Image (cartoon, rainbow, N blue to C red):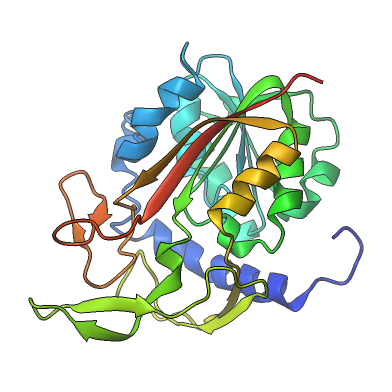
Length: 289
């Protein structure tokens, strides 16, 4: 985007996420107590899969965390010995990340940069080659172009460097609670609402927040995109990455639908037998030049 006039969707989405920062910092959803005790944990899906991305541990690895929000996951990896650069387009989020890094004594192993993802190469012009690019949960739905996203990832990774990506499954994003019908137990069951292959951005006006059911956001208008799984994978391959694994999951870290139930690990699942995937994750390796 550079010096171009900022698109309306960027301004809307940034205002939305700027307002979320204090809500999330005060919420039970983002429980920072383990992190502050030096015992930070990621969600069970990441904890199970990341040993494949960093089989020798995180000590000394250079990690780029894209769309890092206020840096909680960045700091978990820093606690494990990684040197982490976090990028997010929300200045309030970046300020909070820097303050948290200072509080935890991790400022020397972390750097937080306020930048739109598509400007990342301009804000970090000397890539030096990261060992890992990490980006999870609620990321590419805010981006219109996954081909450019994939090229940015490949540009920052050194040859042999690895990507870890986890997010909601695009199949789940076809469904919505609006107009949902009651299941046998009386809870609303989501219904197909949005096109899986939809190209244009979807304008939404929702003032609630996944981290705090009591919150009401003034900046409620957003624009989001659907990215079919096959296209995302193809974009990564075209950018120079080999796919190491692709997993589909029946759980996500937030209450994606009203009917979902939280399990003992903090993940949310639909009751009964899983009918559709709710989450996905993949690992990929940048091919040698």
